[in-house]
Image (cartoon, rainbow, N blue to C red):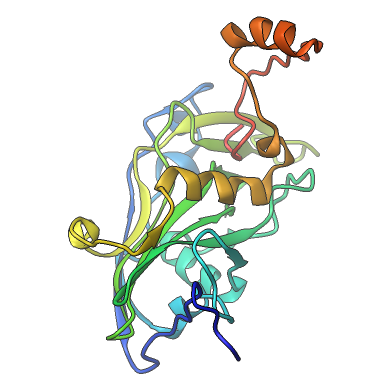
Length: 260
């Protein structure tokens, strides 16, 4: 297959292994105190603190064809499930609550040079717990590859910090046909291999910012992210200048993740 000048192909050494560490901190807060009253949430622990994975697992995060900076591709599901089981034995990528934009596993080439490639990715998943479920806001990820050695120098897949970064459903009454819901905060839920500082001194020949990659990935999930939202303090002046009406939306939760 022909590779254009601004495109790169990405591959890994098929014989290598990667040691991945998993961490889940105790849930610090839930609005309705589920993290205290519900044993499955109160006792939430990582399934396997450390595990060696074949590098083929991470090849599934790479594009099957050459790509350019800012270009996105879908990640293969089976390998992601293997990694998620290191956190919890019952992950699910088919979200139980899905309005059409919740499912997905997307990656984006953020930057590269002759030796390194920096990939950003975003995954939506949930975990089945006893008598309920736990849905993180998202798993945001970073993968840095040594292109010459065909190895992984850094891998991270974590739930971003935020005031609320968990959506929770608990079937407290086992005979009921419904669950009661809550939202909460966990300071650490992640998988990691290697050291983050590996990228500090890399000079890339082509790149977009981490923020731009984050926005590009969010647009793959949510049509609302394709709207050019305007802060309220700027809306009146802009509407007057462009002779347009103001369409105001008030919500009590985030539009761009699964936490609420």
